[in-house]
Length: 366
Length: 118
Image (cartoon, rainbow over all chains, first blue to last red; front, side, top):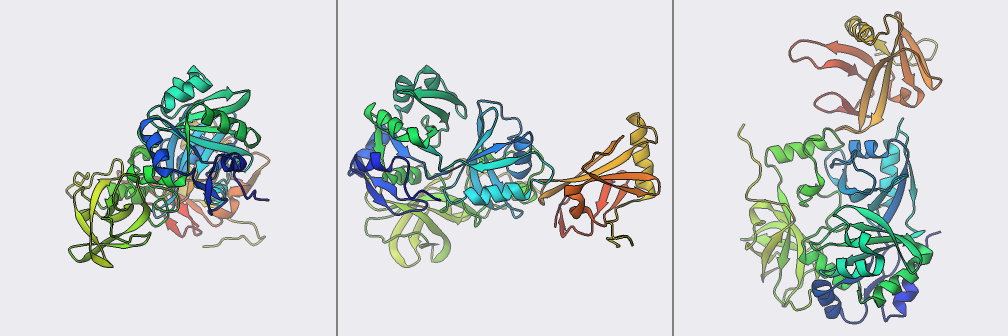
């Protein structure tokens, strides 16, 4: 039976949260002042309820070995206490999920997109033939908070101990607050040190309130999406879908080009070697008057070159900010685009996704 | 290619050239002529499934054992359905690929031939 609410729904509600209907449950859209939530994330530290993301426990002697054969990054050598980001790709090299893999010692934690829990488990099960691998969905029995901002390390460290403050990127440690145990993962999704707190669902309200009361500002999905889009970070369901490949999404840091075969590897290696990546994920700034929504078509000099995948109102900015995939010729920052439906709406490419280098692709002469 | 023998069992075969090479590797591993060829399948590789191959002294209770002209073939029961009718050959020469699986179940194979999809 699927719970219809986040483990901290009541605690958030008591803090003035407004909710927006999403799967698998209503997400906090804001606590009343998106601009303050955004500003706290930029100048101090903030707390976002990520419990809706999928968490899978994988056990067995062959977990990391199998994941290494199925996904883009080198994960077979992840040591206890460490983790990595990797991409499950299909035979066409398209994205099934951009997941985080952490070696927890006796088990492996997979953090996947909110809608991808069953899909990832089925995919792993499909390719578990003789391997010793079992998966269990632990999403509903656990909670997950993202703590971000330039003071995240300092504030979380003073609350949960020096071991948390000393965490290196892609490492995790056990910690506790007010007797409630948790695992703290350093993930650095958006520049500054970023942490994911994983805890038992029943401990989640206690932890959430303690973190809030330590001066870490709770934020909702409106502020979080503004930060994500401003950071040109691809998100589940919007940019991380099987309509795109990891090179288009700029997930270079999640791909090893010398680890050997995995599903989709031939396609991805060919795209890279011959410079055949056709489009790139970019952030795009629109003027105040433009009506933009997911799916809006983008044009360059009258020719359609891509479409919008995410849109946000960023506090302090006139006009909407969007993410979208556009053809590589039009993906350079500074390129002037228009909405196909409204040629008067002038937009500009601001940044390309992390690691994407449209002008310096590794092209070889053949 | 015949997938099933007259008694209904799945056939897997090894060419004479591949048998010679397997005997060579078995001797190198000190197994002389008393050995079996373990062929298997695991998830991964460019196309989704990877062949595995080794020479071993004994079969395990989980194996189907096939005898092809004096050479025993050990197949994990879970891998059996992916390998019905497969012939193991050996491709030598400067550009040879080594052991090659000719698998009638493979709808697609990757460039190097080690991975396939059914």
